[in-house]
Amino acid sequence: AQRVTQPEKLLSVFKGAPVELKCNYSYSGSPELFWYVQYSRQRLQLLLRHISRESIKGFTADLNKGETSFHLKKPFAQEEDSAMYYCALGTDKLIFGTGTRLQVFP
Amino acid sequence: NAGVMQNPRHLVRRRGQEARLRCSPMKGHSHVYWYRQLPEEGLKFMVYLQKENIIDESGMPKERFSAEFPKEGPSILRIQQVVRGDSAAYFCASSPPGLAGPTDTQYFGPGTRLTVL
Image 1 (cartoon, chains in turn cyan, red):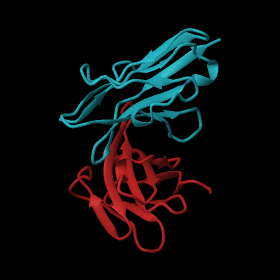
Image 2: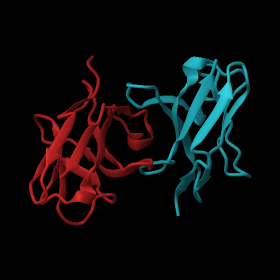
Image 3: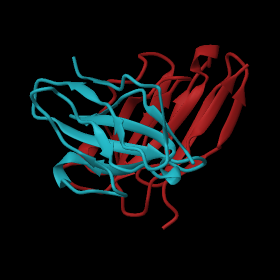
């Protein structure tokens, strides 16, 4: 079965602390993975995708096929990073995880 | 470019009524997707459409739900004889023409929050 698991509903850190939002997937084929973000009162938008291998707003994510993971990381969190983060698996459709709310305290 | 537009933003219906949700994709986009989000859950894929074609409706409930994307005008998600369990946020997304389809970057609308009394 195709599935995306985000085990943490809420992640709270202080400004300047490292952040890791976990994402595991279940898919037998070659996966395409994405992180989407929704800031307060804004639309869901693409943050990054594994195929582009770029860093956006200081965030990176590495696809680990052995562990079937695509964790999102940032070495130093900022208050403006507070948002809902959704990991998504792209097959013939986008399959979303349940999301993790990141709270960054000053 | 105004982005993906959805209306209404909020819709209240009584049980048994019909709900019509509209989505205008971004200019130049020919792929439209509908998702449903129940409280405390992620977005669940419902249907993928191109102009005048339903490409994948594997996420649509078998009864009462239908979707269209006509040659002219917005995409419509229609829910007949609504029940309380249909209360949710419904999101539309669009992506540019091309073979990537669902795995291309999807641009989301603000959503329609449906409340069934």
